[in-house]
Length: 507
Image 1 (tube, rainbow, N blue to C red):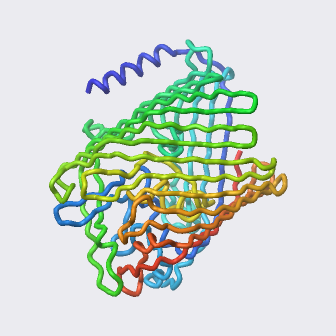
Image 2: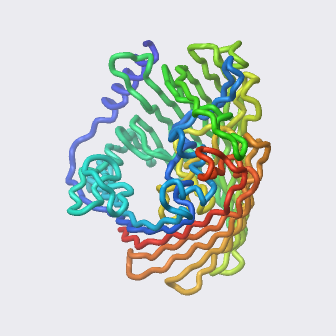
Image 3: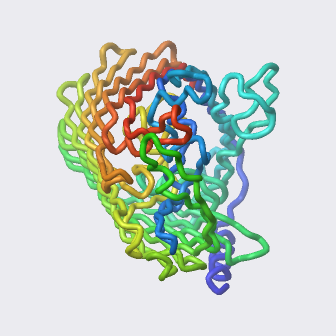
C-alpha cells in the first residue's frame, strides 16, 4: 500500500510542477491501410495464433502424477498439437486432403495528433481495425465484420496519451501519460501499455523511466500487475564511427495470476495407438520477474553491428505443490537472451547481414528451476513461417524469440539489393534450433529459405512480398499429427511453406 501511495504522490507532484499555459494547436492525421494475402500448405499449423510467446508466462511443471505440464496461451484439445499441426495431411479430418489454404485480410490504423505550435504539449489518439479476414462472419469484436455488408463493430484503441515538455529543462525532456507505445528493447518489450513515462534526450545521452499498470483489479489490489523500468543510452559520434550503448532494468510483479497447463505426454502418443485424453488443469500463482540488459549498435564506415544481452531472474510461487513431483510450490527463474547483427554495405545498393540469437530454454520440469527466457510483450521478426516477418504478420506461431519453454537458436544470413529506385529484393536463409530438446528428444527446427521484395507503386503506396519454405527438422516431429489415427502423432512433420503479399498505403 505504501508503494502505491508514493507512486500517486510522486505523479501528482510532477504534474503540478510541470503545469503550463495553453497555445494554438496543430492537427495531423496519419494512416496505415494494409490489404494482404496468403497461401500456405498447412493452415492448421498457424491457426493457433501465438499459442506461445509474450504475455504468457511460459513454464513447465511436474505435479504428483508424474506427468510434465506446459503453460500455453491457447490450445484446442483433441484437434491440434502445441504448434497447431506440423503435418499437412491432417486436413483430411476436416475435409481438406492437403490442408492448403488461401485468404485475404485487412489491417488498418488511423492516428490523430494534436500539438501546440511550439511543440511543448501533444495529444495522440490512434485506433486500429486489426486483421479482418475477408468473409469473417460476425459483427462485434476484434477481427470480425468481414462477411457480406461488412458492418463490423471492430475498432480498437491503440494509443491514447498526452505528453508535454518539462518547463524546467532546456533539452528535450517530456512526461507521457496514458496508453502509449513502449520501446524498451526489441526482444523484451515493444508493444503498447498504459502508464506514466518520463523520457529525454541530449546530443550524447537518452534516458527514460516508467511505471506501467499491466493489469488492474479495482476490488482486489493483490491482483494488480505493475511494471517499472529505466534505461540510459550513451550515443557518442566521431568522424567515421557512431556508437550506442544502452543499459536498462525492468521488473514486472504479477499477483494472483492463473494459467492453464496441458500434459506433454498427451502430445506424444506413439503412431498407431489410441491417444490419451488431453489432460489439463489451472494453476494459481504470484510471479515476480526482473531483467537487466545491455543493448546498442555501431556504424563504422560500411560496417555495422547491433547487440543485445539480457539476464532474467525471479520466482513463481504457486498456491499448491505442483513442482518437483508435487513436493514444492515454487519455480526459480534464471535465464538469458543474446542477440547480434553483423552487416556490411558492399555498395550503396547491396548489403549483407548475419543475425544470431540465443534464448535459453528449460530442460527439466522437475528440478524447481525455470531456465527459459520469458519476455513481456513483443512482435519479433526472424523468418516467414514461424516468426513475424511475413506480410500477414498477425498470423504467426509466436510473437516472441522462442517456442514454448524450449528457447530458440537462430542463424540467419540475408542479402538486401536495391534493384531500381522503386524495387528492392532480399533473399535469406536461416538454420533454426531449439535451445533444449523437445518432447521427442530432438532440437532441430530446420532450414528455411526466404525471399522478400518491395515495390513502390506511387508515393506512400507499396507492394510487399514475403515467402518462406521450411524444411522441417526432427524437433517438428513432436507436433506432427496423423489425421488417419484419431488424435495420434505419426512422428513425421511435413515441410511448410508460406507465400504472402499485400498492398500498403501509409502516410
